Length: 341
Image 1 (cartoon, rainbow, N blue to C red):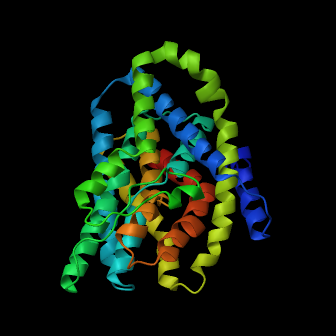
Image 2: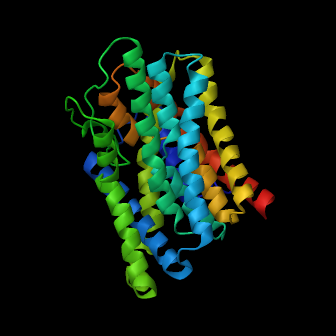
């Protein structure tokens, strides 16, 4: 209940209600894109300032290794399970969506941890960046294998990864014939949002306490308000995409609800085995449980036209995202605190 009464979460709920009644309230795409870039820059700075204190410890390496392991395991498991119920292309697309991550869910979780005064490592922002691309690459590999089995071409047009927020980002990817997996990997790692996040982390590490004091009005004082404004936009988007899951298989809806819980459990298991701190474990659970609704759809829309966009986009944004924002984040944090102390 405390999470739902947070002002940022209440703005998300308000956005959902406004979208449900078909209000004409909307956030202009350019502002939505600015808000997403601001949140990533502020998150990167916070992570960098924290890393300037902690340094690169063994826990940092273990957390990043766990993140990469999850980024590979989750789409593999998802693809194996979903192929029993939907076409191979739809299975690959949904598995990639749930194998990648949601930056907004992560940013909201960071704010929640700070409200709860739970310490976490700044390197978890880097873990988020590492977890975005493996699922996309695996989906392209799965799709090429399916095409070869069907006697079709191995490669289809593909676009680059889009900025991790805002409906306008979906229209930003262009197509090129003969784009390889390596090309998609390059575009994923050189995407502007990724570079901004990692660049801000470097700035935070280099400037340390002096930089933190100088940037406090920007990365600290404004953060909560900017997040609330952006979650309002996400609420509007979530409400409007709920319609896309009408008539979909109950199995897929169940996966959108239960899959994140299983992925979070897998992350918690790794955290316990690796003796990760509570805050890092909670964020690892959030990342594993989140689903991409921008970066993956932006790529798969061109790289895998055989898949159904309303399926993977509707499930991730219409079901999983609001559940994580409203209930998932406090649940994962609570479980991590109980198990790890």
